[in-house]
Image 1 (spheres, rainbow, N blue to C red):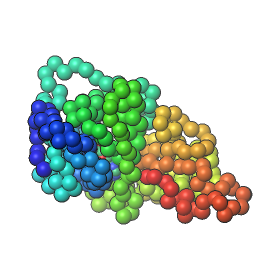
Image 2: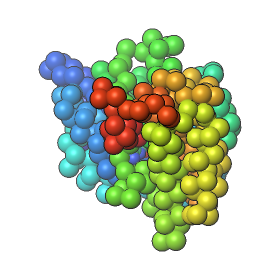
Image 3: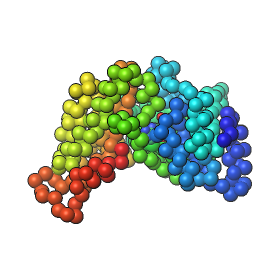
Image 4: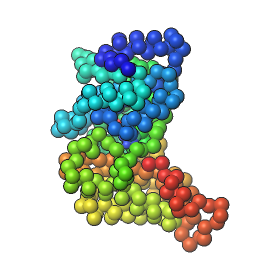
Length: 307
Ligand code: AMP
């Protein structure tokens, strides 16, 4: 694996691979790589002949200065992990390389950016994400770019901007990789102390409560979100938001029909965590209807949830 720090070096590595007819995959990260990131690299490795992994802690998407300052940075370990996972090129640009003097262009995605994370963190968050992802896609020009379902709204924003700007790239989403107790892997988990790590179990507990209710036939968003919030209470965690939304537009959904996303955010001490699960109305028969052999069982219903 080669490590490059400039756009020019990245472009020449990609051009050399293209000249040999190789396909190119991009995994964009903010570093502190964990098994979630590595699953994206592994998939890129399966599908593409040149795998580029970017590590860039993008200041433009942080709405809190303290969050940016304490965000874990582990360049040496990241390089070792990316190489072991099969990356060919590690792109670790400086802030000045990505945002040179007089940088003045921002990408703003309407609609889907405005709710949940957009409302909680302010418009600069998804503007920062959309701008840096557009830049990384333009710098690398990959055939496929890989993103995690863990950041479902970010994924929806990226899908929207790729369609709206006619960017010639396929976006592939991968399921959330979790710790043994269900906590979604996140670089920010490293910032939790022992007691906070225990309390963080509130997030997967909330998602499990909603899934169980769906499997029992519940379809009302209010009932599902209330059950999710109630499941967090024993951990002394209150959600910042918990909502049932359309997975593409992030518009609220009042009644589960087809597929919807239950998304939530919560703060454990200073650390803000997000998580989500796909809920499917076809995952279980409605209450009071006896299951028919052609319908899925409750166990299968849980297994079909992508998060
Ligand atoms: P980040 O470094 O947090 O910006 O994440 C980089 C990419 O990894 C994004 O596409 C995330 O959605 C994805 N990702 C982060 N955590 C996970 C996880 N637990 N499972 C799968 N993908 C993840």
